[in-house]
Length: 454
Image (tube, rainbow, N blue to C red; front, side, top):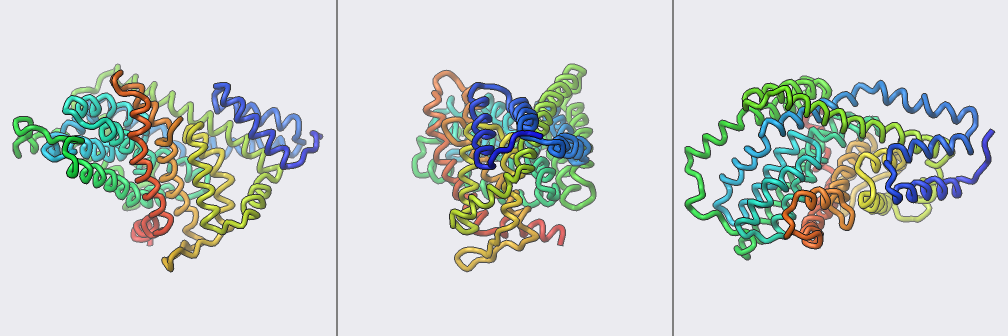
């Protein structure tokens, strides 16, 4: 028998220890897993030890998780095929004649890359290497240049095939296909808001984003030739998402098609070499291993907390604040943004979602301002997409948003961290507006899945 402890003090002890060890720079996966084992030994009992096999084995055998390494491999192969460089080259040369065209092109290219990758880091770093120098050479304002890369890169967490959506679906027992489809309209809405903001600012003040000089613009024939070069990767994305949305294949089967298609696209571009295949496989192994270790560690940590009535304690504490359903949802969103300043998205999902989703299912969202609310059966889907929109904000939030440091790692020396911080703020406000729209108008999330699945 372990020592008895009140749930209030256990909460302070568990999450306080977690915060201290993370601030010391220890890896999240081993901190959560190690703390779980220590607390199990000190405060657990014989039945508590069943948490280890009962929570880990279902995850180890979950069929949906096999989509993660395949989508990561697909992204790695497309990156090594030179598709990302060609994609930006095509879009910016087509829109370069417009004011702010390069920044708008960055957002459009990032949106398309999100549909290819589903990984934020790859998009942020690659666009930082390609798009940022191109915009700075043409005297773009730093705020517009850096902000378009930061905001566009975060779309990878929302637009399918998002790795975050797959993990959320596994943890919350939600359909991956529904989450993918539900995220389409919010993702395109945010992308459109970024482009509209850039276009209006640059129209009012052309010095912020000057158009390309006429001699650098393409003729219609040259634009057609660029489109032909990208026919194969765009067709691959259309096939992968199309077979998911039409129900022809599950997301896991679509990931297999995408992985094979990425190899074919790489061959078409003349980049299918043993070195590239090996590099893509090693990159996939590293990212997948990192994700799975965090899953195992955080699952044990949260599992022990829930076993000791932590879920009921959180429910009582939050509902006792008297905030109402929408107030509680806003409180959750604030907590997630704060966590995003310190933890990566996998850790946030594994620590917060198992606690938040059961609480959400006990609440009733009847709509605001006389608008339609959310039916109980749709709550998990709606919250999943709202959660993913929120995670974009956590990547962009100063001072420790991950996207800020991804960009700084590849930015020219003259671009300071302070400039990157400032450039994120207007787009962070747009994300807050997008999040509010998804909460106020739940049909933005629910309408498309309803049309597809009935």
